[in-house]
Length: 403
Image 1 (tube, helix red, strand yellow):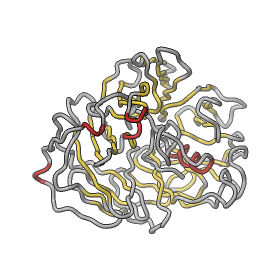
Image 2 (tube, rainbow, N blue to C red; image 1 turned 180 degrees about the horizontal axis):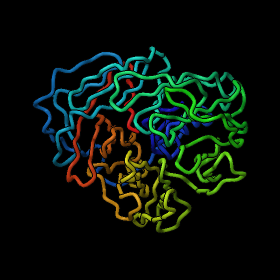
Image 3 (cartoon, rainbow, N blue to C red; image 1 turned 30 degrees about the vertical axis):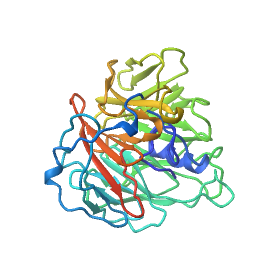
């Protein structure tokens, strides 16, 4: 299983170019990792320090294993910054998951999850998160299914989890508070076998089990069928399928999916000097194209929880430190073509750890890791500046879950 907050293409462990945890989880099992991407901006080493307006109200720091805390004198992304929203909390995975508040630097344990030395994986779903314990693949078979593991649901801001079921893999459903669970017989190769899937919530199963096409897993449950992703193949080598279990064949295929939600899909294809990202509204059938700057390409993306915005990780040529790609986060209205640069997110590809919409509101959160510090930035579309906080990790370094 992979690190859920990883969403680019230059760092391990991570998911495919998409940020959805299901594919990430399987690719870590099948391929052993993936990579990260982003767009040009200031060199990480040249970022200057700017205290945030939230500094004066911060309480004493907490330290110790599995605790994330703010340093005494935080520095921000170059330029003016805003105070961090004190209501915004981020899940932190690890042996004992917790909610972390960037504004206060405090962590609060999530009740109902037993301590697990391998840690937990979080998958963003409608209304919260699906949580499943990490597991290693069977010895000598990296692409084989292990024993099914328990799955819980954690509501946005919830203090405790609710048991959903047991499965090999978990994926988002279109229904609030629900997930798609997929199981394989232990030891079978998931790259070719057909999994058995069903929709479930804490109230129990919501659908009858269905047999997935061999070599595919569920990427996202939508209002118009299941979006299936090919297993064990490089991005673009096989098409994603929009599939109805009752229909004999896929109703739609997509070359390289960057983001998906219950009502929308964003994808891209091979391009030359100028690239674009296409979006499809599944309810209306309306398509739109987001034009990217010349010489750039989108490597990953994610829709906001309400479907109003699409955040894209846009990469440029080898202009980062050591020849890495330079990247920048940009946001477009869903169904629109106008891109807005997220302030302060320009960096070399190895600095961008992950990004997502971890709260119910439209707040995009990004994690950037530099040589001397790790920064979190939160930005609301239309705002002139982000809120910024520096973090440091405890002994076992739990990972923040952004989306």
